[in-house]
Image (tube, rainbow, N blue to C red; front, side):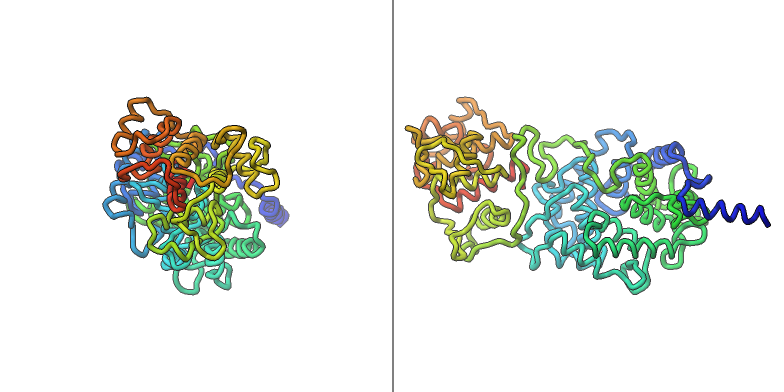
Length: 539
């Protein structure tokens, strides 16, 4: 009796103190398992496509595993995605928006830019709240996971009836939590898979009291529904995939996999490895024959999540540690170009769905709305923008500084820019960073109407701060401008800047004339800055 009581006491102390059980998988064993499963995946998924099997999940597992994967593998996948997206006109699916989330995750994992895939922004559909949540709770769950994987801003989606925000997705997930603390894709009985996924999405939002409470209830629910052998069952079937989703959830929450609440005849890893076969593949059910590709892909990234947690690395979907793995002339969304000035930064959306009453159908509508949503430009105070009106030099200096995300600093650079004027800090900053110059005699002429060549010169200087190469040789300048009938009227000091703006598609090359000294319109100015920020990867 004393011996039995001793072992009972020892077990109790082990559970209470969170001591690592003797049967826990060691880090070296886990590393070996990851390597073998990654090797199996690389051998069986030779050419990953766009799809839930043999596609993104295989790519994510391999990319996050640290296994030595040939560069050509990532490049081939990236090319496949671009061809697929181009072929479908950027529409991966009319209703299942988890398709976008899955591809965004895979592209982020390999260091590619989901905001520029064959000219399409795959983040943009996630700005449509109604379409994203159409599938049920898994829509907002995977939208949040995808957006947070690269710290992406939710793009403004003009086609959306309701512009999505992160908080809206968080609230939508919380609204689906069942009385027992879990989630289900359908019905009112909590499912470990959906509960695990919901926790993965909410992990970054636990500073909110409502989320913190929901997470605590969900963790208790997962503990309560765990099978006696340490695994999980979904729809009355014990399977490997359910274990994987719980492992990923706990690692995202920073909960040890040998936490006493989740030890049942072994740890979660012990349970998952019972489904693993000698070649590194995984079965769907423990008594099933042969491997199952979906189970193998999930089994791999489950092991990877556990290994990353054991090594103190970022989570499976926390991809801030990813370095560019795909050769491309683009970088991650809103990260900027490699050579940009350290002070230049992306301006976040603060007013989704911003618009003006006089923009409908205007050729510069999208550009104006995109900049207005970031408070880079503003209207006339009566609900209009006046896209065909002119703009002063001071107003232009203001929006350029805002567009670059720079802080306003008043200077005494110009005698005609009094410190008390609303535009003074912006003119001062534009001067400090070399974006503007005066008109001579120490003057800036703030109320003068800005011309097309003046605007091009300022934008070219701003482009240099953004890391763009604005230097052109004499031949390139001449060849670029010669296509316009009035190119000889461009001032000598403005020729290189004007040529650069046309070459970089900041100005429209379909123009018949430059008309360099004509007053530039407010809509054109918005378009120039929108084109600049897009090319500089700051939108």
